[in-house]
Image 1 (tube, rainbow, N blue to C red):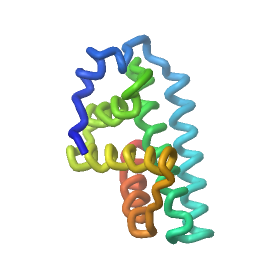
Image 2: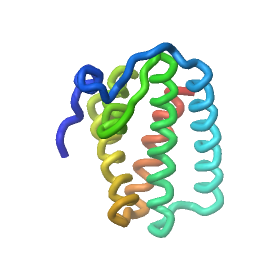
Image 3: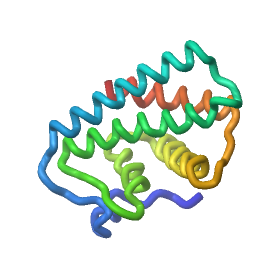
Image 4: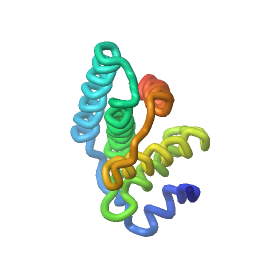
Length: 143
């Protein structure tokens, strides 16, 4: 998997747009991330984690993290559009003080989530547990 380009490269390419701060949209994104995280916790508590629900958790966790990142982007007046938008949002995580290890893990999660959506890729309990732990770590940093 290739290294995620810098946020500035995405800005120069027009994948990231700079506009005015959108605090209301940021607030909505944060609210949705909180709601999804609460549901994630309930699902894990009630259903547990196994190979049959691993993909659902991977997708859910990816969405939670992306809502958090987008909230910060909108707050600062940035938005992403078009081909490469999700990768650009991953690149923005560096601006949020994610370590390079976390950026790589998030990019891998982005790639694998696409594998689920477009290729039917299956993940197991162990990977879902790693992703849930990572999501919890990121979530607590934002909230």
